[in-house]
Image 1 (cartoon, rainbow, N blue to C red):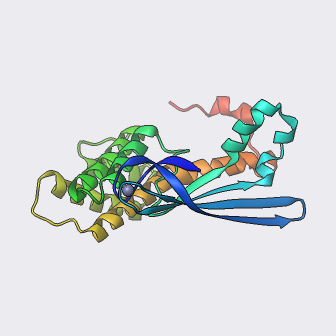
Image 2 (spheres, rainbow, N blue to C red):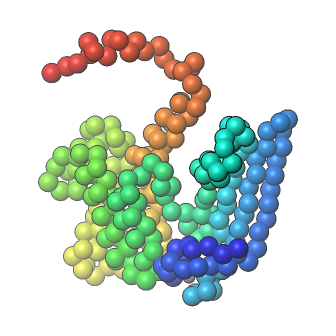
Image 3 (tube, rainbow, N blue to C red):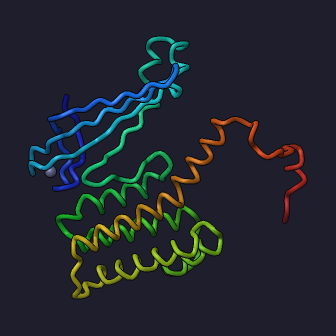
Length: 230
Ligand SMILES: [Zn+2]
């Protein structure tokens, strides 16, 4: 099997051959959990990318009741694909496309131009601020605004400020070296911030929907009408 993948070693988007595969299946009572680990080889730089795709039987239990042509789409939807090596990109399900694209652009150039990588990370944060309607003239003030609104916790806004400073140095052509270790650190920081702002709330709300209303706090929908403030 081959697949078009963005190689995070050399930054090329290219068709890669699967060179190894390991299947792991766990069963408990009537349920099962299956994961395929696939190793792909980049034809450009000869480095490998490890991906996993997992599926949980309960997530596709409804598929048997569907028409055959609808099944594949549902199975694809329930399959979780993760890039495990060299570095996972942010999970796109909850992150706005523009933010994700800026982040991906940063990761793709990390081995080619570290200053551009850091600039792109900063851009991802700028777009995130805009998406979250952060107020303020500079990125610093926007991040503080997000902290005030409890969208970013204090420690995260410190991390974001650190990223902003690094981004400034990159933008102004300051004579500082961005080592690959530092760049990895900045990529991980940005990823954590995006997870916190988008992925965690998204996953939590999905989990709450899945568990149904039984655990939800009793909320009288009719009262919402009366809760309007001016
Ligand atoms: Zn490559």
